[in-house]
Image (cartoon, rainbow, N blue to C red; front, side):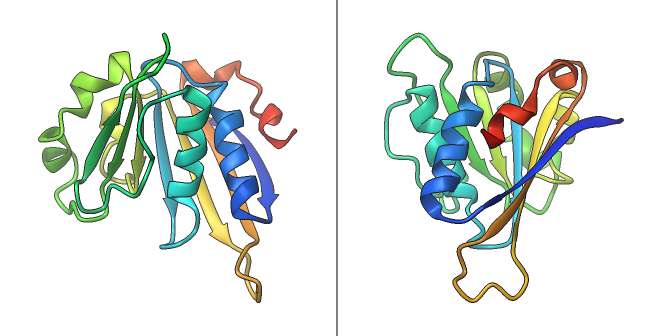
Length: 163
């Protein structure tokens, strides 16, 4: 399935959080965002910005040990469901225990480490891959690739993310 892709470089945690705030403006209830990248790449920092941009309640922190957290909207926007599939090895079967398919229609669902585990939830999804720059001694530079898959993202201008 071909997708719409944009790539850019982020040079600080603050920029990663700002990217999340900009991305939130494109999101609506029913959107699935899959975040991939090594440990410490900035997935949770990006999601923290998403939470700020969506105006949800509660501090967005890594859901590694609770697997999933729901952040209700403080306004009239959708809640944010933040899940971490890192510890789940069984694919969609284990993910089904989280009822993400039930949450998806009325929420923005963000799944860290979701590749190979949550694609069956919907054909319309956003893949965000975060790579640390090779040889980066400051450990701050990240290369981010955002790919929108499916009809939902076919006409969305992901270029606004790099503004």
